[in-house]
Length: 388
Image (tube, rainbow, N blue to C red; front, side, top):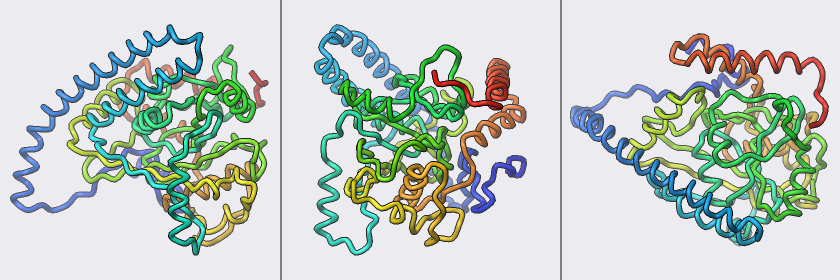
């Protein structure tokens, strides 16, 4: 849409914030009849599956609450929570149409033999240790469900203004998808530098830590410029295990990506349409661990080469303020063949401000909330806040 053209990346022409719109295509008479039948069947399917998702979610919440009795015994509580997460969240993903999720461990080194590729696949099946950082792109609340099912991890909220994080629950992480990004922490909320937080989670044995360094959801067509959350880390960072993961959705008519979720009507509508789909596709790629920037033999130049970005492919780009973040965004781009954009989370906040003003469907309460957040960000943006 031309009215949102100011948020189109200059180097690539990609607009990463608007919900994807399928291209118009001519259909045969048989296809048109089939489409008409689907228009009748899909709403019924969506209602039934949405009810079942609600029942499973309620059961999960109740069992989660019951599991609090195991809190004094941390390993037992974690085992119990992992068990119910695996069962119930996987069932919800099936109802949302994700019957099979393709997982692949990839290597970016040229000339790797098939035997090396097999070892990479084997490394992808290893147990994920507590305190490992999983760096991932972010396009939907489906990402949250998948990561919760597979890892039962620690979800974090990142604040670009202070470059700190805090732990959040699964439900808070789901709500953040598509929401207006909080650039600064609310008053009184304690946050921590990422490296300190990760090491603390490792000591507690709390599980892997999920980081979405883009800071907000996109439409899964490109990768935003990372928030410099890793600026104080080294390359390679051998004190922490780092896993780089990329999630990609394939679709024809309806995209499971969720870029705008400013009120409950948007969330409910998207969830309903996802349930109405008979089948959705998600593929997950994980970089081989011996090519991770936490490997002691990792080379920053190797990580920055052959980068699909707004610049020409094959050009080594200069290391930015956050050298580790620059390396990881490039590795992620090479894994997915997504372009790296110059836009960032602050551009997404500006986009949502404009989207709200243009869209009469957003509630006045949501508008007021965004205005308050924008004013808070402006007041804190002139000087870096103190560490919370």
